[in-house]
Image 1 (tube, one colour):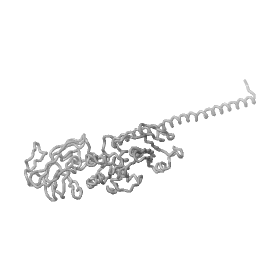
Image 2 (cartoon, helix red, strand yellow):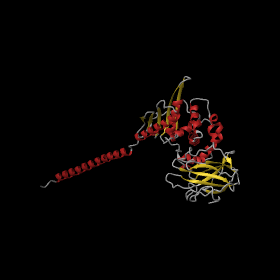
Image 3 (spheres, helix red, strand yellow):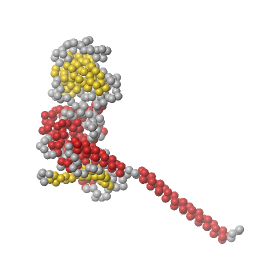
Image 4 (cartoon, helix red, strand yellow):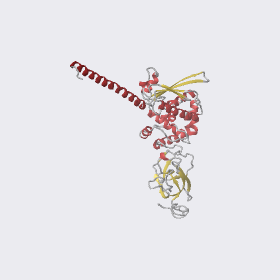
Length: 446
């Protein structure tokens, strides 16, 4: 059938209108599908991202935070574990719930939701704990509030202050307060090894050591710097984990926290030289994994000079730092020595003699300590058998050569170390020879 011109024009416009409507329909539908997909992707990507501050609770904590649900629960777990460890150490349960404001991004927080002092500290990338104490002269009530950035350690550091504030009404003198707060954030159950931030190790190893006196008697300025916190942590770690000082350190801390008339000087005054020596030794040798308990100095060992022909014998463990031979040596004097036995300097290492492995690990090495000046000389090699001339006067200490941070409970074995003046008494037998037993052949270099 043939259409008129007018009809043809109408038909053409109808076709154009239909086409426009169809295109508009698809254009309108496409963004809707894209938006839906984008929302799904965003929901997946932001699964662990919080929209704003919310409250999370556990037995001993309530935290107001803009952390994600998952991260907030993980933080609560760390805080609960920490408060369990420190309350066991101090022998006091957590008296009441600790309230914390933990901030990931201040843009998520309404204006006025964080009090000014806490806000200033958070803007500085740090934390602060405010404790209000009311007392009638006999009893007290304390309430602490923590404000902290949501990094790995700050909330735990501040929570130690809050625990002490609410439990004791004080956090103690500055060196103890900040040192133990740093200890708290690094503490692991049944593990006394160094577990600090790697930046602390790097900083201390590349900085002139701060003296014991400079730490203990510093001006009371809290929040001064993380560098000063590092020195306070180092001292507290030595005192808390070294068996020479740990038995006095816990009572000292509790005494200071409970208002008793105690001080560092009154408790450690007679041990000041020993503590200073071991503290500086720690600063020089520590690293992640270092065990101050295994590397502690034996101050009770009785030394004597080698005057006669009878050798002096000592037992030396692989699991230990410098250990006393019980011998005082004289500069320029030659001595014969032998170290009989084998040891391992790791769980999976081969058993070796005091000559050690090819790389020197496990070799018997020595050092001379001056007990008058508390000065340690430079280490030197010994091995399993030989003669040696003392470079200085002093007390001879020895150990199995290995990195200090790797001395741990997996080291095993003991060697019997004997030493005497060269040319006196019966010569030692080289213990590496099959069937060797002392006395026997003449001593000499291997």
